[in-house]
Length: 436
Image (cartoon, rainbow, N blue to C red; front, side):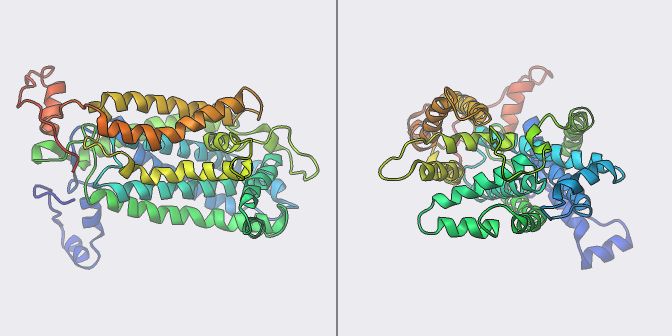
């Protein structure tokens, strides 16, 4: 969004003017990430995580390209080639740990980014396309991470590939053909490894392309903010640079410190010990489990244990697992409240935190063996997960009595900080403001 008060780009040198006329790259950066992009003045630390997700993806691409130079996509030597990277390649151990730990950090950052969007109503009009592009990125991340996990060709990699691709066989008629197409045969083998290696290398660049669309879609309506109130004047905004670039660098510094702590001191803490055993098709692990960032969806998959309405339990589980993500695409139309931010929706705020607890406990259940009480708990929480979006949220959004919204972003900032700075915090009485 280009506000009338946005600072215009002015080249200061003849070379800059010459380049601006032919390839206005500096103008693009200025308008998208610099002083030419006015941003709501009340963005908090949770708005840093979009930038952190972009940094995490770049780190994954760089380390992944280096690893690909030394990896052999052949079942006979794949596991040994990873050990070769760890032991013989200069700095290979660090690159490999950066890539493995980076995947977990990438998902952690994105999960916080998603929950922030849920809390502040960033999926509401006019940001529906922005929200849906974010979910496409999330799906691409999941596919890329799964394929990368298989490449190690350890015990958990092999059997994870067997289980996850086997889910497609639950679909009537076409399921077996889809599974065979994915595997390149009837079980994980050399063809599977080559397919997954090719796609694991390609999909991050596709993800990067969708991120460009995601950022583009963000700049059309402009950033949402913790109040959910639209920008009304220049007083509601500050230039993205230097204010939010400085804030993002602070967040990036904290992120890199935590990242380095895991890479150098506990790099294997987020992985499965069984994956340090070479793949053995004749020995099934006692407890097959995916990486931690898939656990909530794995719990939903395993929650269905009985055939229902003539549909096998396995198919119900697969459908529910995919539906748990695809359902989020409908969120802009399921939540019809004119108020965006949960800061002004007391009941929705309470339900949001209940949903966070449900998602976390589902993740715990997904990491546990398929036995009681974890299966029963997964069933109860899965029922609530779908009820939250399909029943509770639509009803609450229509009936909830919301708090009055501030008349502007500046009014909310002054009400919060004005008295501390001597500014009083006065202004007009809060007036309810629709989301449009």
